[in-house]
Length: 336
Length: 243
Image (cartoon, rainbow over all chains, first blue to last red; front, side, top):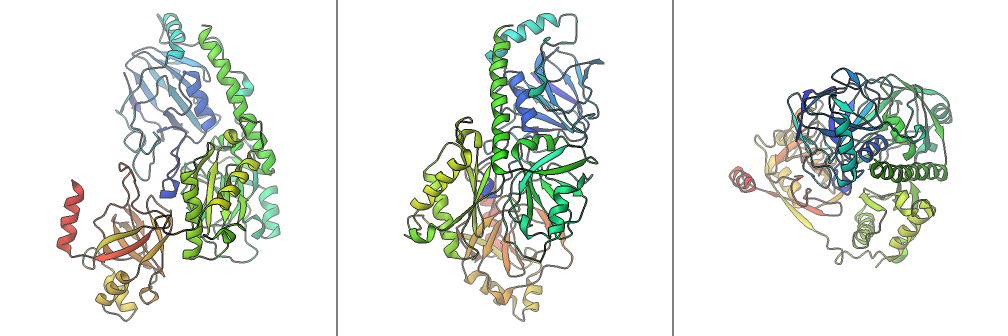
């Protein structure tokens, strides 16, 4: 049961929802940048949400399937095709043995997720399959994929047995098949070119000059090319403290917006260090992290302030939507 | 028991999935001891929805899952997490013995190829290299936090007489296990990284190994003591750890 990497793409890594409980040892969380798209990909193929998937960045991989395999693509649109025929995202996809899946450059969004029914067979290290690139462990040999890598996969769950049978039947004489249903459009994200990213005031927000505070919330910032899984370096109005202050290092988290002395903010992303010592002007809310993860370098973003209460309401709504999606899918899987 | 001192601690949200417990502004053993008391309490009272915590100099940051704490949207998750943490703060006992404070000994081969900057550190402080080693091994150090890299300890308590500024030009590669000085701080590099620390020695111990049940040898709150060993002993210990 394996998938052969023909072309690895720009940065393709194995990621689940992240490595928790070890930040106190300095071990970063890692995990999918857009956990929302990643979890949906898993749900579409009957996997538990936290199953290891592939995360492709900006330019996707080319993969050869040695065996029939149920998969799903979510996240950024990379004009996916199988043997030159376009395939649809956000719905299950039965790939026949001997077919090649090609992902190209991301048109909308930045990161595409490929879930494989059963999941990719990589060892769980410190409770997670996620790739920790800098420490070289987790995922596929602690690194991003290279040409000729072979990915083996676990058996798919019983949940999708009926769907697999039906799609295999329908794929006879073809390279692949897909069901005629898709997810409700509101249940996944539309990736805007200039998204508004909602955030709360950070712990050191009030230490910044008033003009910097105003500038942060009212002007636009560009996500520069020096942006990666560790952090997004932004370009825009310089943000300065009203007076110099040395801060003691303490914990930071996914979405923390910190400002080094030269004044250009950095948003910490999935591979952020566990602790930091720069003043934190804002914190992106959890519900908008998936949207942020899909912003390509070069794009413009604008922050909008929300309260903790609103942030929680938005996050709970997103989780409730996912719950609903789960029950809708189990119905679809049984009523094949 | 320090119940009175534990109570007036500030709870500050770090976004919508974490809360910072701020234990005043003073970097001290007393502060770290209070932080550890709460950490131990959370360890021994696992609560669904409380994911993990990160101790630092004057803070303990606790990460939570709002969906679980809200009971799938029925309750206010912030009220829930504050309730859990306030209860932890009021029940945690600041008691060194009960919390099992550990002393971790780290063998170090000083000078030579392992500590290429030992001479420079000695010269800049008008000391002999032997005296630098003596001062470095004399004291015990408190692990205030682990951060920057897996297993990297922020140690407090170095003798000011061996404080030395960082190298003006950082090295591209610092081998794993290197023991260094940067300003008034001392530390051990668990993994090979670039860096500007003055390197005075190296330990044969593997400070961090993801395959081990306890990947990091050191934890915040530990006391560390450096023990000088010979090059021969270093090689013997390296062999020992290979098996």
